[in-house]
Image 1: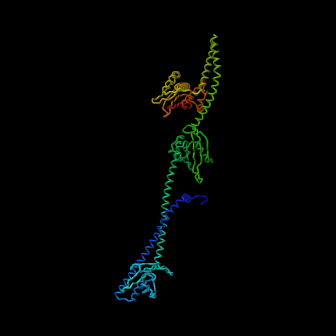
Image 2 (image 1 turned 90 degrees about the vertical axis):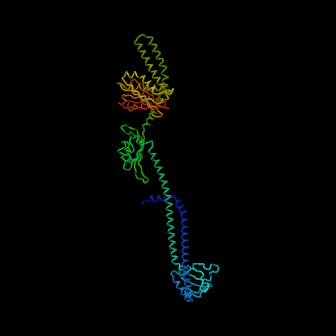
Image 3 (image 1 turned 90 degrees about the horizontal axis):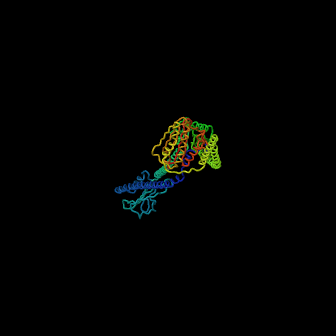
Amino acid sequence: MKSGKITPSRTFWASVPPWLIIGCALILVPIFVVMTLQSIAKQRELTTRLLIEKGEAIIRSFEAGSRTGAGMQWGSFQLQKLLIETAEQPGVDYLILTDRKGVILADSDPSMIGESYGADLDLKNGPAKQTLWRRVPNPEGADTFEVYRPLASPHGEEWLIFVGLDMSPVLAAQRQDTRNIVLMAATLLLIGFAGIFSLFLAQGYRSARTSLSRVKAFSDGLVENLPIGLVAVDQRNRITAFNQTAETILGRDAKDVLGKSADEVLPDACKTVLRDLEAGGGVIEREMDCTVGGGSIPLEVIAATLYDDDGGYIGKVVLFRDMTELFRLKEEVERNRRLASVGSLAAGVAHEVRNPLSSIKGFATYLHGKYGDEEDKEVADIVIREVDRLNRVVGQLLELSRPAELKKERKEVGAVILHSLKVIEGQAKEKGIAIQADLPPGVPAVMMDPDGIEQVLLNLCLNALEAMEQGGVLSVSLRKDSDRRVRVEVSDTGPGIGRDEISRIFDPYFTTKPSGMGLGLAVVHKVVEAHGGELQVESAPGKGTTVSILLPAD
């Protein structure tokens, strides 16, 4: 094993709280110690009872023999012989018969007859037939278990009989039983430890599994609902994660791409980023145009290589965000900034220009009436027309520079559309342009300035008519875009607008028409913005143009 490596067993024991082991010990050890001591005590008590019963059986056997001998008028010799024969039973160390004074009357060792034995025992106060016992030390070996009690002689005298039993087998059996009991207690203790430990581990496993499930559900939900696209690939470059935003941006379903090679699924721009990661890039951040479904989407891409805790390579992850809306907002901010600058300039210019224009128009009118020459009158008329045109430009500039003053009322958008189409109907017929209106019922009324919205519609429709030189179709549709917005679309079948020009069509003085001033769409943008609405433009060269007006329906 390499130094510094943490094995699973070390990790396991390191994760075991010490209070768990201490608690198990405090609970189980006293219980099993008490149980073991009780078992040992019961075993010793049972052994003692068995020895007492064995001693009593020997005493009863001797007593029965002595009674039989009394009937046959045995003497002391026959009694001594009976005692010796009785003492020859297995496990009997000695058999002694004494009188009340402790003088040995008969002994399994005949040399002890006449000696004193048991004189120190007090049996006068006990029951006549009570069997007593004691443990007699033996310096040469195992102790002797001695059973004794009073015994009535055939001649009416009172004797004492002592039976000494060998404790060697009993002590050996006791030691073996004690070992077995301790071993069993230790085994049960370990089983108890294992049981309690297993319960805690099972609870810990259940808690860990629940926590892991919650974390997994949270992380899966977080990844799935991220507002940015996420794609993860494994070591074999196969896709392992593909969230909802990635589905929306790339136009692919997760169920169709999971497990497939990234080279088969991802667009070229993302594949380039993955190759750059393999070339040694740690974290890559860049903005790029990504071709998806025949169109181009500006993306902000962040890619990184993934490693496990041991530093092993496990895959790559790519995060990307659609920058279309952000770029649109930037353009909107820039346009508003330009409009504000133009408005400030227009206010000053209009003030300085209008007075001289009034003087010029006055002199031109004077000259037109004073001179009768037709050529001079024509020149004066030209001056008057140009002054009027300049006045209109100045008026539009002033309108662009002032905040829009709206007189809102709740009105049906369809009625305003119909009125606007009536105004341009004659011009459309002159150019051979068909007008199509899709105005379904049930579209909610909108709080708006009818004159302002009509001005917006007229400007858009007139631009559409001017864009279609050789006939075409002007379409105006109305529908409920959502619970909070109403959508009006003005479409033409003209030549369309290039991508570079779309971002500038609402700028003041930007126009593609030879006679245009470039202020109409700027005014349209200002009025719609004042209503809290939004303008959207879709166009491509050769495919016509659609301008959408989104108005709040509250």
